[in-house]
Amino acid sequence: MYTQIFFMFLLATTATALVGWRDCGSQMGSIYTVRMTNCTQTPCLFHRGQSYEAEADGRWRANSNTLPFVLFVIVLGAPIPLLEGDACDYKIRGICPARNTDTFTFASYYPVPTNLPPVGGVARAQMYNDFGDTALCFELDVRIA
Image 1: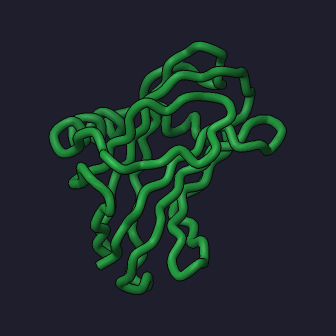
Image 2: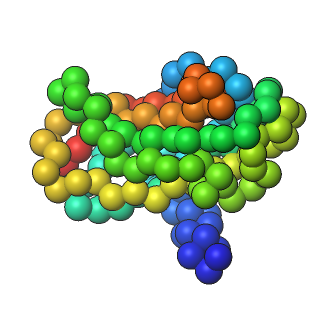
């Protein structure tokens, strides 16, 4: 719990609304705002070996009892997972499981692997519903340095 409070404070002091993110097929909800630490406009610059936090706010349009997710970066056409698990473990506002009309905020903290090449790519966060369909999805252009 103290870790979540620390990260919420850290995010509040270093992240603002991001311009240039895209919805990539959200079927169960609407994402209103995406925030990234140290990035206000895409492409976001990710330094290998450093960690970043992404946060998304929105509202559910359907119910789901499970919310598995994966956060990955697509580099040179290949998806490279950065973080995966149960999205409810990363919820900082709202209730889990997902309930129609409820609002949510999810935040994830992830490292950028040192073995990624210094090129452009796309970072994508994707959640799935009980049936394996895309529940929420957003992506943004990145540069890896």
